Image (cartoon, rainbow over all chains, first blue to last red; front, top):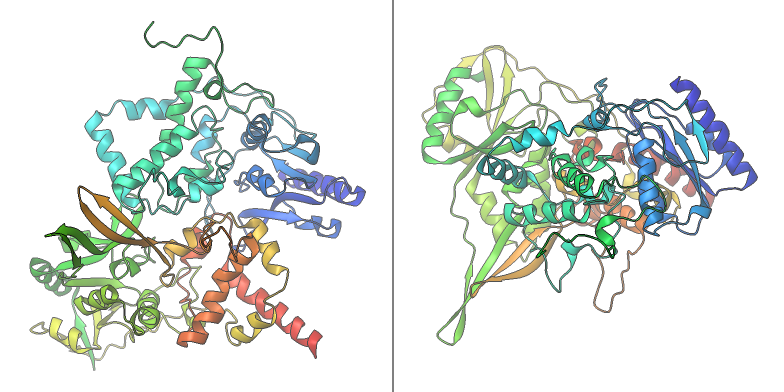
Length: 287
Length: 335
């Protein structure tokens, strides 16, 4: 099945580059361990043989479209990645006319790691209800029936802990954080020209790489992604010290789902609840 | 003759040291292995490949106060940071020890960095040879070896019934005073790191292909996080800022990286390395061109951390090979 996916992607990429529909195809190729996928940028039709697709194709390539503004580009998206496309389209960050979307019905992705030949699915695949891309120009694979709604069992389990236990847990995680910002750099929803964490006036977060500042960084980032996170969980995959960021992001996701019945990135003209005010909206404050 | 210390003797020696001094050793923290202070030998992981973060942190902390300033009698009183804690760094790998020795170049070059100098003086390093280098390791190609004892105070190499002990420096000798070592004719194994990366002549090659579009193509893939720099035992860039709280001001330095946007932005907003390609090239030119030009050694020790930690597989080993290839082609073209 996967070999067939690879062939279909190569054929389509070749056609798009030869016809001049796009300048570049962003896909996956085999990495330096000879096993795990890594992002690939194909500019010449002669190079399409580099492209692959398999269950190590973890990266959310949509992020790279932000570097390709104004340039016709094709991108390969899995289900979760396709929601990031919708997020960026609805937030007017990318131009639909310049993008050719090759959607892939996702078989699930395995635990990623250099030379790590794991066959264990990533945790993101446990809660995934979007194996089928929500937006595409060309689809690879047969759409599958999605599972029942997510029960957020991981979040519920976290909530059985006392406030003190949770505080201790996050303090420990904050000790590990080195503020390398890999989470932000991998995230398709993090595209601010000047991230709050690097602003000097006002200085929202101090410069120290220390628990207090690290907690502030991770918490505010989670708030900025509330109602915007599309659950690709790339932030958690790329974290060099394995901070379980999904516990923060999914806590916010569940809140937004409960309050507004809203999941980010499901359509390209979605009206996101936290950046919109409806005239008849109930504030729940002072009423 | 080889001097041997048994596993039990080693543990009781370390336990003795722990009573008087702080011992940092590789220990398990969640699913990571990190150098942390340990209070008992049981906490030490002896058979690890390499720690997730390098021990450079003990000499160049992720955050360190340079001095504090407080108003006093109409003037300002400055108090520099004094490092008074004696530290034993147990279980450092030869690649990481080489990383620290290499950083003496920039940090101890006049005017010397007093904090680095103090950390160096207060720390005794007990090295641990690698018995089985990991797949990402390439220390031999970078001028070291899995049993390289040249940058530690004491070197241990695992043998069947304990550890072979080599005393390298006076500091090491002092620490071993009174410890019973057994004489044995056992020859410690000589582990090898078989990965061969063509680093010879890299300075010339990278100079030749400096303007090659290779860098901007590679930068397509780079997401410009700081993971590589922060796991690296030889990256030493930092930022400095003042922090005032309740009338007391601290001048703080923290890790920074050339991959950050704005790292080279100057007053007026101009940034000489504004695009991704020049930023990425800087990382590799610093390690493979500028550092050897200034300080002699290559600025990479082959620990392989960046190879496995990079979220998008920017692999320095692959880059060294590519640079050699492109450098040779460019060289031919100009003849």
